[in-house]
Image (cartoon, rainbow, N blue to C red):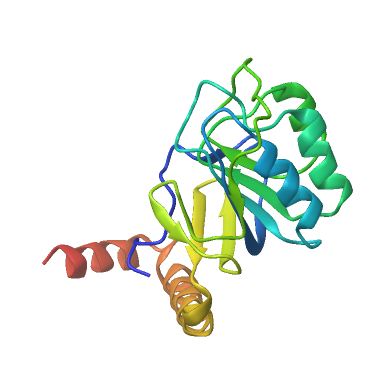
Length: 185
């Protein structure tokens, strides 16, 4: 996808071994008000990944270990936020994938604004409900639903080529030198 569908690199997993993949269930919340997050947890289907547009706010957490624990209890696929969470140690202990900009001590209020399952922007990337969200230690990527089959086909081709290249070159000093000469010529 030519690097156009990855979230900003500041959005990382709480634990480097966390991974997630699932359909986006989007949340557009006003800064400092997580009622929409709670509504999304209530209405999302098992396996959905909550993707929260918190406008990049790093002052108030969009959720803490209790709210994240409810998402885990309902078998959601993970949480991605253009914002921060609270209760770092408790959240890590849940063994539930959370990708965010960091942590804070400040909690959200509950005024009741926001929308769920609408198009959003998260980490500088447009996300529609139902898009595929995939994340690992390197970050988060969005695969738009209309092109997901094409992306899968191309990704499998690239993986095969990368594996073949590594098998033929790595561990062989002469092959490495030849490859570097070819690339740098």
